[in-house]
Image (tube, rainbow, N blue to C red; front, side, top):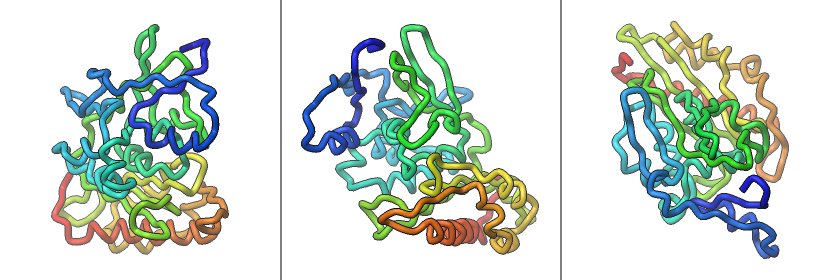
Length: 266
């Protein structure tokens, strides 16, 4: 693999459309029957999403509330047939700026485990995707799993996306938000990520800090362009850059509002 031209195939839902009618000029390594890469498991410290775990597998697995955003994203990724075949790891490795799985995994502080003949190494998701369709995987490595630390998983989360229609659509913008709300009704912790508005999905750290100590009603009123400055949306056939920023602000506000009247202390 380190010297020849190979592409790794798991679900194949991104690979085949990318080939189109072009002549195949590369070899594929099909991982479908590698049983050690299947399933979603846990140990004392982590949840592990295997490289062959599909979106349908995720939806069937009982997971802590913090995974709710990832499950909501799963329901909006393609058709049922695609969800049964496409892998979560494949969505990450494809590294599209509009990959729906990235923001919900970012708010879980997910890490990527890479395996090679030299052993294992782990890279934070925020460092693994380095650009549009670019990842920090060496030629002799495969992604063996996504690791989610068992930290703050009792907090609720939400995922919202905007497209030209509800389903079977590439996102114009998307937001994943995890909040821990105390008995007093104020936000104890906030984790927020935005996708499809920059080459790589981004955590809005300054805004996260700002939300702490506020009620959800107060928090929604604080969202303005100042805290979206790190986003670099583009204008394309789906939307203008300005529209994406305006829509992102509204999605963040709606995400915060969805936590109102929730009885939570996570």
